[in-house]
Length: 575
Image (spheres, rainbow, N blue to C red):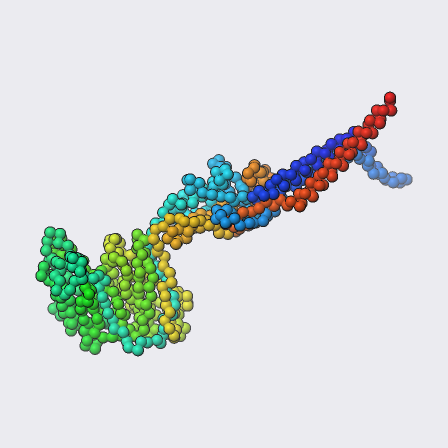
């Protein structure tokens, strides 16, 4: 009878624990990333009343006689199955789909969780706001931009850090340059100074305006004396020369703009600077700007530069360069794009592709750039014009720059705010032998400047996370940067992790050590931003478990009751 009582007691205890487990699961049915547990029972050690006997030659064997002593809890293990993922709209909420755990640090050890309810604290750390534990990262993502500190694995979200401006160093071009399109009349090359000469009272200068009356002149205690030097190239690209060997104009206080224009014309009209057809280029003054018009139409390499050398401390601002307002040639395709200087200032760079007299060959001319320009150096051919852009005559792909000319695909521009550091901007024309950049086919010219790599300064506006667990920052200047890569931990036996409350786990002796990796790498799952993992506890299943626990509890209680009644009858025998 004692067996029945003790077995009933163990049954009550076991089913009470079953009810406790079901109750806990139901209590956490809406807990983020909660993993429901299940209980398993096993029979307790049986008492052997009679051992089994072996068969003999005359009688058969007998089975053992054993009496069970009840039931025990074999184990309570978590169900680590994936919970449903629901969108929350909060970009810093994160859900893990598949294997892996987010890694947090409490300052002394790493702690692991599937609950990605993260936020940014006052020190710009990405944390679990319920505990303040800091989310951990992996790799060097964000370190080169200064968003993360090398050697420190805490994730920093730099809302308080400005992104420095980035000067444009490359422009990517793509599209077609027509092999057969032509104008009805070949265009004539026209140059115009990038600055408008104005008087001290702000009006537009005329030809009779003396140089010392220009707003561009500063005396610094002296009078306008010095030398203005003319340099540049002719229609055919040869350097400007002067028959007398003198390209210099010595100026005085009485020198006016008409004298400067006349000097330029003297240089241009020299026999050595005539065009092949005997024509000459002509300088004029129009609305305060010096204009150079080619004497011949068609493809032209004319350019000009004016340099002032003072005799004392006075200054006289000359044009930084001459804009090409009309590019001479039979087929011209203009392109433009905003580029940035070293301080992030935006400048509209305009260039033109012009088909040369050499078959399947184009030049690219820097026609203008907005803003305060100190100089576009035309002393080297590659600084103002990229020459010898060649295309395959059969398949139309870009085949590189003419090696005999020796130009490089870049322009060099000096901005007024940083005159000691000329900025080189390379032109990415495509991969030679492929059709991924510029091409030359019949039809219309469609070439465009597709993108550039410069940007102004900015500050972090919003943060999101991709499936690989990389935090991506969107800045006020429109640039997106990778800020950090979240660390993900994998375990050999996740069911053996030890829960320490608040959705946190630590390794146990049977879980294996954490293996640090990144989402979607080494077997780790993916991360969903703006979402959370729901509890995997199922209400219907837990209700059934409660009914089973109740039935089991009632049955074992009835066993105890019946055993008690029998014992009472036994004691009544001696009365």
